[in-house]
Image (cartoon, rainbow, N blue to C red; front, side, top):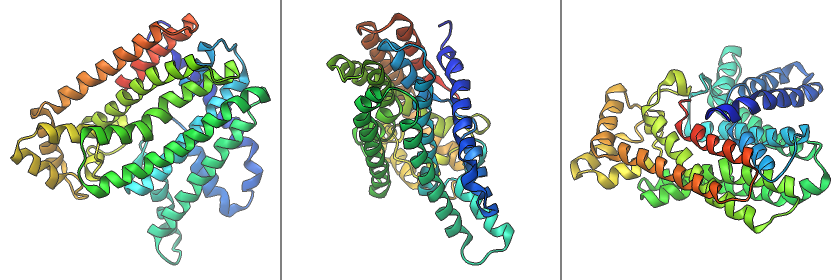
Length: 355
């Protein structure tokens, strides 16, 4: 691999094609004209994205000795359907207006209701339709996984990990809601949410799935590599998301600047800010975070506190440390050399990405 994006550059078009083929095969189920909006929303929502989770799965497969096989691309692509499901539901729970530069699914259906002049609440219709779209994507994720074409022995060996990953993701979503309801959190509690909601499901489990699919068994060394590498990269990945949620360019992140602040996200970045803040700074943070009417001036004020307390610099240092620890795990792991380099590059790509 010559650069950090090479493993992603390879996998992205393969996943795009696998998803397109899968959705095309289900077109007949949407022949009713009233269902066209559902299929259109699904198609649009699956466009774009880094395809990180399929990449970790694929390179896990290669790391454990798996050869090129279209079946592993299909199995890995199932993780992108799972991610799309989580994002649709996330946006409903967070009342987010935008996703990847487009209206979020519930806002899209809300607009359809308004434009059509239908009866009842447009907001309720939009949220209900988005929940159903998210559920559909979740169901399709399992279907694509089961019908990937990989050997039955491989799928059977990895199925418990796939099932456990879904449970952990839902638990993480609840813990995220709970943290916002509590209104306060320590860095460690925010880290716990990040590990359940993002770290394990974004890196550790996709990597483990790929390795077990290739090995057809859950060897102890696989768990050691996946936990050591996956959790470190996963936390760094979420920390980068925290930073982008506050300091990212909307043209690159696809979401309005400061959206995480308006939504009251109790991230590791905010937790570290409160730990380092003076009493006056902490009062300012608590007053502004979670204000749905937070304007550009308020966002700028929060950014200033985050920088002035040293929380931003601390987050960047932690990202570097987590990635270094992940790379050290790879260096000691009994995996294929090409996959080792690819996974090192993926760790960098996942934690330095701009969108």
